[in-house]
Image (cartoon, rainbow, N blue to C red; front, side):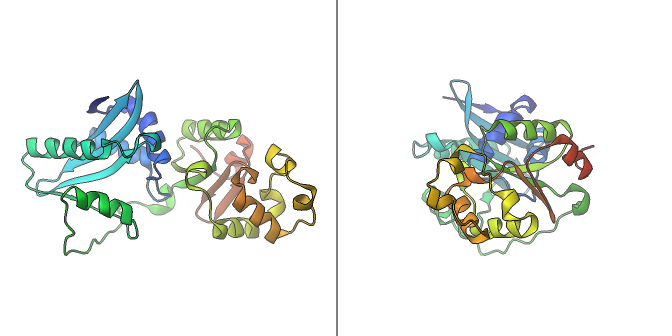
Length: 258
């Protein structure tokens, strides 16, 4: 295993790691986050590699008062082997070399597993409340969320198109994080369950006749919830806009890209 500061050429592998680890959010452009950290004079992203594959990362920065850590990620197949601890130690070393007196980080509400991990490393809860405000034009830069399965050929075409046209998006992999019933019902309400359910796919065709019979919205949602492979791919959601399936002309007509 090798650990080193990442470079711009490592961003595609880094984003794939963050997505596989469930760290990306629709309101944050992960590529922009990575570029800002790599280009900044007081920040870095440290990466851990095994046989040429990026398996861990941690973003670290020093604002002149406190050191901060973000995007601690360990690939799912490499967890519980001490890599998260090693990445935190590397971040502490980076900060000490720059004179930072204290390390701080933020954990989202409800993430008890992360809280337990950090507390086991000696970090303590602080008596502060975090406040925030976006400093960008959110209407112009609102990040889309692309839902699907990583290895699907149609997904690969959609992601290539979005990347090539400068569209910021977060990738939601059904195989990694699943999908919730509320989202399926919201989508079905917008475009119709008939558009959303992929009845031409092998997963649906492999169902029993009873499962395929008497379809309605409620039954279709139950099927897609149990088998996300039945959701037509990709689903792209941005603000109030929802696109199902991939056709370049449709994306252009929707105003995506530059």
